[in-house]
Amino acid sequence: MNRIFISYRSSDGKKDADRLCADLSRLYGEDQVFFDKQDLRGGHSWRSAIMAALGTRPVVLLLITPDLLGMAHPEGGRRIDRDDDPIRGEVLTAQANGATIVPLLTEGMLMPATADIPPPLRFLKESHALKLRTEDWADDLNKIMADLASHGIKPLVSPKPKEEPVKRGWIQRMQRGFMWIGGIFVGLVVIGLLAPEEEKTTPEPAPFVSPPPEPVSGPHARDVSGMWWSIDEDNRRLRVQFTVNNGAIELQTDAFPIAWYPRWQAYAQSVRDMGIVVKDVRYVGQGVLTHVMGVPRMEIPVQALTGDGRGPLDTGSVVLTASADGRVLTGQLWSNGEQADTPLRLVRNP
Image (cartoon, rainbow, N blue to C red; front, side, top):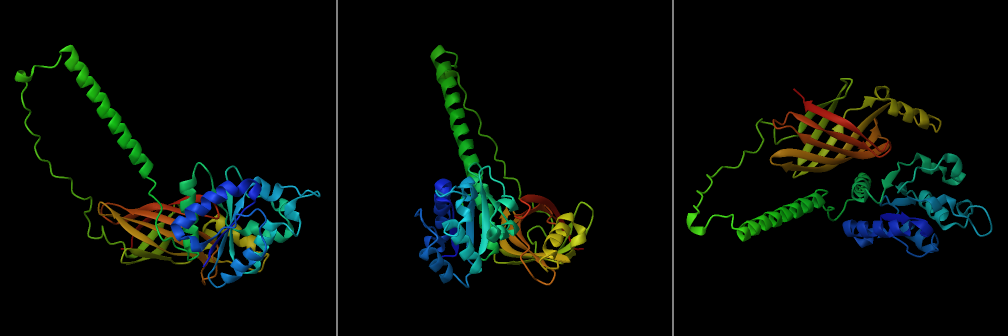
């Protein structure tokens, strides 16, 4: 059943939409992704698919392109301002049926100003926008996947690791280096600078050197489960609990007051007019724990909730790597709402 819906203006969004659909279908399965390739959309097929997905927490990925709001109607004015506009119909249908709508900012785009958005669609300004840029496609796709995971939509397969292009480039440089050395060798033979065969001596084999030990020294180096303290730049301490089970890791934090951070104060102020009271925030999430040469590394999609569990107020991801003795975790918290990283440092609870 479809749980991921792609909405786009076909005049300038089809190329990115096609690519996004291909990647998501490969990662999640074609039956999970609804992508109508017809130019005239927003009719029965879209509404039927959204209705069929009720109860499964569907997510609509809305591509923000110049024509999304700017495309003119043949009779004058903007298409987005007319009730028969297919994009307008898709977004309003999705909202009416409880879908989560995630704006995707394509190359060079910013979130439109409130005044440029038709009043019925202005709820989009409160959505957590993500980026979908041509030059940073792989990174942006990973962040979209983290956001989908926070909504309970997990991939069938993992994307190719980001390091692969670097490895290919390293191999190519090695190959070119061997070719260059080979060329010098042939040249020396031709000009007679190499010693005759009978004068050569066979070098002694290099002594065996055992590989360096894994950088694991402390009793907690492999085990990150238990209680930690997250310490920010102002030395405020927040208790964080990790639970590990067969390679999966769960994160829960205590609630902290919004007064700690200006961004949460601003958020609380912005939703107060809607009757929503936010006094404190906590993070929860589930992700994957791996080991690199024995050193734990975790990647956890997270949600920010109110202290009493309402939300999500924000989504994002936490990436942490342990020190050699396993007593310090360092990394960053990515916020989809702010589109920014916050450095993290956690120490073992004594």
